[in-house]
Every structure is written in C-alpha cells, then in structure tokens.
Length: 95
Image (cartoon, rainbow, N blue to C red; front, side, top):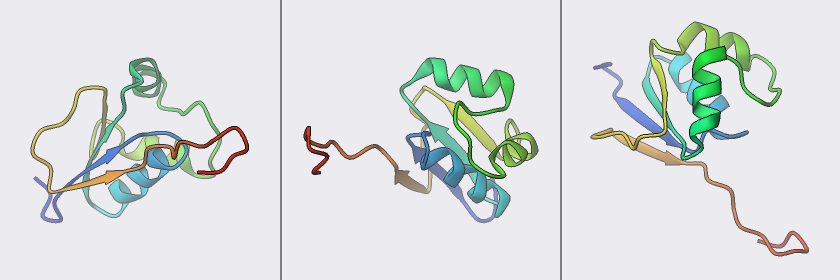
C-alpha cells in the first residue's frame, strides 16, 4: 500500500480518468472504477482513452497497471472515494 493511501475514482470519463492519472502521478495508489466495461477494457488494452486530453496518454503509459488500476468491478476498502459521475440535465441543459 502507498504511504499516501488508496484512492478510488468513481467514473473514468472526461473528468475522472485525467484526475486518476494525476493522482497516480502524485504518488497515490489509484483505482479507477467505471460501469462501462467496454471502455475499461479498451483503455486497459490500448493504454489510451477514447477522448483527447493533453498529457493523458503519457500519464496512462507511465502509471497504468502500476499505481493506476482501471476496473469495472467495485473496489474493496479504499481510503478515499471521489465520485465524478455526470450530472443529469434536462433537455435545455439545466441541471
């Protein structure tokens, strides 16, 4: 276990995945959890995301399968959980 603790980022989309990689870069042991199994499998296999974010692919290369784990199975016993799920909105984009 990392001395800094274990963090779970719930939701690995446009906000969660970059956040998870930056936390791994800062020395935390990070689990990215997402219910989209296809997305998790693609990122785990290719080491790249389906979207563009400056520096993301480099951080994924550096930390994926080391201090960053992506899974579609809810992780057990983390020290901190950060939820980055989308906010539902109405048809006029109001939250």
